[in-house]
Length: 161
Image (cartoon, helix red, strand yellow):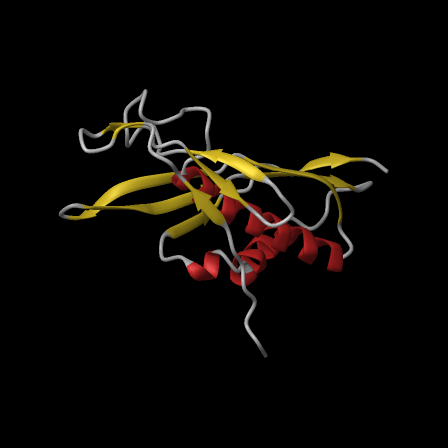
């Protein structure tokens, strides 16, 4: 089986005093289909005004990629198990720590999915835990990173059909 390939175009041009470390970290991410996303270093890493608070930073994108992949894996598994999911929301959070002298890394990502299910009665309570475990096991992004990923699902919401 041939590999799958993914690409992104990242572009930056100097705006400010580069050698004096007083330049904008603002840049653009471009993806297939024409989507452009303003990006920047995080203001927690590079102080304002040299970072752009309203732009996506790599750390946020990392957390979002893990959350998004888990969600898509979960939704597919839930559909295959005939659960009717009407909404999924996750307030994911990543934690960055020093891992060695001069090295920082995102060491933990916590996913807190909140799922609304269309059903007339509560399903077996183990189904949610089982599907989240399976979703984590098959998530491409989770399988690609070394940080700890914790899934803490919020209580299931029911919506009657």
